[in-house]
Image 1 (spheres, rainbow, N blue to C red):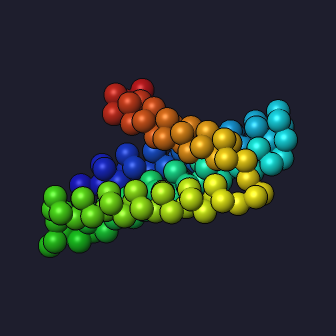
Image 2: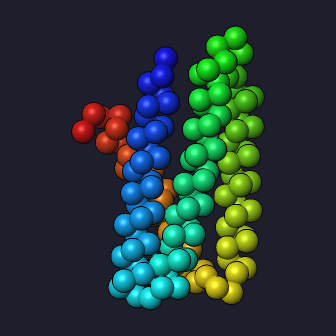
Length: 123
């Protein structure tokens, strides 16, 4: 029953690890602004995954009202709107480097899929 929640928690840990490592690496190798920008982009991906995990936990705990296709689509739509909205705010900020924000988000999504592959295969 809690297997999807455990898998989602592992994904969050992988993504959080990517956020920390990438922000530190870019901050040390390039400059502080790049580090903060990568941190922001990767954080956007982490927030989106966290939202989906919270919805999953809610559906696992509420066994009388299981998730339907409609609730999955609504959750996905809200996640996409959350990512796009936060990304637009970050890209408009003069304190952040747009390329670094995009790299952080892409890296966060790559960490998501890499963790999906490794967690699902049991490695």
